[in-house]
Image (cartoon, rainbow, N blue to C red; front, side):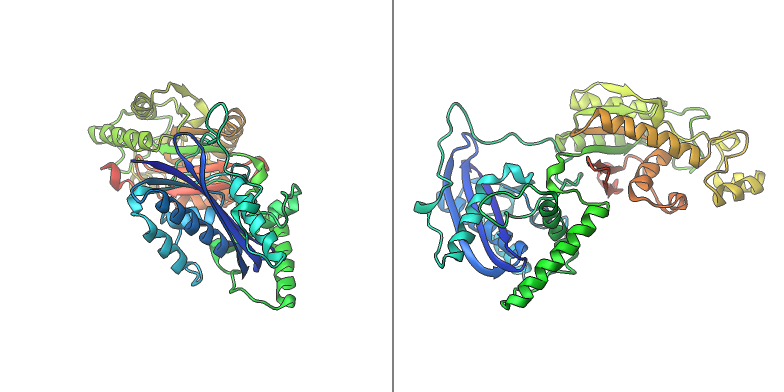
Length: 449
């Protein structure tokens, strides 16, 4: 069975504005470009153009070999996430395009990958050529293209896949469609404007049908500038030129005998080992993570239950385990081994104070949530600096994982009491070069039981 790589892109100069798409089909084994497609669309949005590029690429691959498998690579986070089913498609302009793309080839023979914009230059260039041709009142033709079908010299031109947290686990810095001219725009505002367009498309609050009036196009450009400014100042999305994030995949250890009893089990107690159920959960988590194939290092809390879970996963992945004391669970002092009801009965005043303030510590010299947060923040900074651009599995506990998530979201300390974290569940935080973070929660352990 032949294997193709489809690289596709689309863009709009104004969003909505004059739009076009480009797509190239490559041989997956050699990287050689086998087919090109591009078209000027008239006035449309970035997202419509990106979907039209995807459609053209899939159709070109089917024309070459209807029985082939296809790996789609795009710098549109929106299209990749929607076509894989992780984001819902609400906008009426995009629903029929996505449905049509899903019918070109059997879904089981098509996979999707987000790539940074700089790795999608061929399709980007084709899309810009199509828009340039449209501005001249012409249609794009392959004979006029400057993006020639290249035969690789000295090896494949296919670029290696950048390490990522897996298609369902880690978010990546979104890069939007082609530039507004034949050459790339290096300035940060342009990159931020494109990132803002992707963000707006995801919420679908600012995506509107294409309009032809010149005044409306100008208004759309002004709104894009406003969204760009907000993106620069608001955490959550990173411009495309920030590079791959440091991605921390947070795995809670498997069950211990204390877990189903919901007893306080921190770093100051008996340090229980995994139960039989916990060991099975660790094995299934290892299989799931190995299937994703994205983990590059494993770091564990020093406690027995996390080291056991980490050892099972690392053995499956063929990696070593590094122990970091900063990932240990909170010390719950005299509450260790007790249920919440038992603590309420024995230490009611201390429990009330603990529930009311992150600075209050458990009875008997335990660790407050504020102290835990300080420790986790220092551990986070150290790990992010050591693993920039990499995907690292951290095997740790309930409070550290909730704290990683809380700090990434900028949520108040009381949010810790509003999160539920199952045994052997996964959460992911990606840290970008500008200090922003993006969180993905995968707190469903049904596949691990």
